[in-house]
Length: 361
Image (tube, rainbow, N blue to C red; front, top):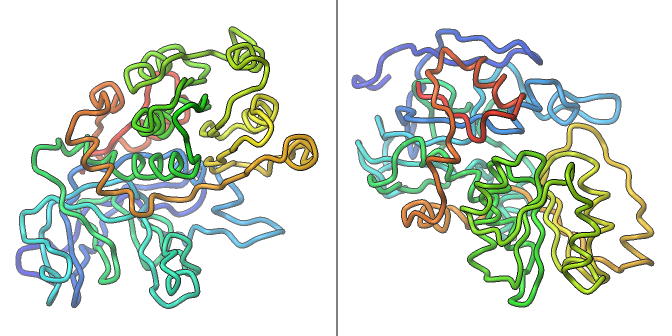
């Protein structure tokens, strides 16, 4: 243990669905090439909520093994201050004690087929912070970046609770890149939660002809306009499929990005998008989603793109926040101490009065 670090720390431990506890845990000790940070801020993600609620993706079912290796410290949206460096870590990662730093959510193995082809975000081992034994997360006072982690220095001008948004924003940017937006496109982004808002800001940088945000929450739709949406529509108030068709001469939108996590938004998008359009599916769905694949194939010949994590997007996300391209004070609605993690989870689950909820150990 480094002389500068305490021996134990408070940490949130995920044991089973809906059994998360604040406990004392050993402070990680950096080995060669490793970095230990003092966590400044950590966000609660929608995927954290789905894990908490017991979604089969994380806990398994009769068809698959669960992804979560409990007991585990959750938290993959974070920023912290470098507190200790293992041998060679400073030179390897370009970091020094006292620097503010963030690490990409996945720590690639470097050896599998995908890593060898520079497709590291699809690493077959897939160690993502906060879900795997090899990569404990940030809902604690301290966390460790393994030697193979992809780390970035964060400018001191970015407030810590804003910097915790770098990870979700990087994911949003990647989803927008998967949409292959062109200048004359009509783009629809379904969902104006934290990730959808990041997508709107990133899509605005592509300068589409019309950028439309969809959400059931009118307040979030106002924030969507502040992020760059030209038009916001509430599906509970208007027939959004008819509205988008009317705006496009009856054809439908060119690009549809699904960021709600609700199965109805998938069917909505398939009906709303034009022939030969591009559909980007981003959400982590709680349950399997069934759609009419004839629409995708024979009826419209759609381009269906998945989107996973935020590869190569962290520098862009850092720059966007640094340059004030998002209304971060409107997006980060709640900052809570680590001990109030249950309140934070409940806020995210309710969704009506929060956008991004962060914990500050």
